[in-house]
Amino acid sequence: MKLKKHGLWLGYFAFAIYALTVNWQPSTLEFSGALGLAKALVWLTLLAFLAYSLYASSQEKIIHIMRDMNASYWGRQIGIDLYLGIAIMLSLIYLNEGSIFVLLVWLVPVIIFANLATLLYLAIHFDQIVARFY
Image (tube, rainbow, N blue to C red; front, side):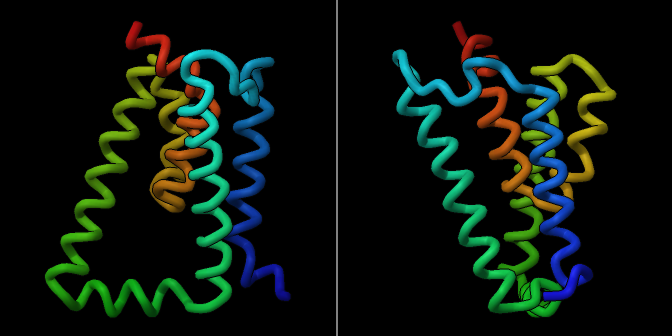
């Protein structure tokens, strides 16, 4: 396997390690309490989606698929839907953090990795986000 081929994945894992290290709390991987199951489901969703994404990237080149998708109305609609969701999640990150700097740190990974990055943020900050609703 060539490093160039897996550079984006190395970037994702490097960012994930950085994000976990910087934001680590004793409760990050604690799944007890009333919302323990919900938090566990977020982590499981992240891990399952990551595993499927790694598998998909080993089977097909995303650039070719994106080119084909962009040729259809539904493909463009899916792209618009995805990036609207990303904009909403970036807004949530800003509202939760209250910092433009933190938003900028997450901006590039969220744009490149979309829901893999947003699920990572949600998993890491689950307790903090849920606490805002109480």
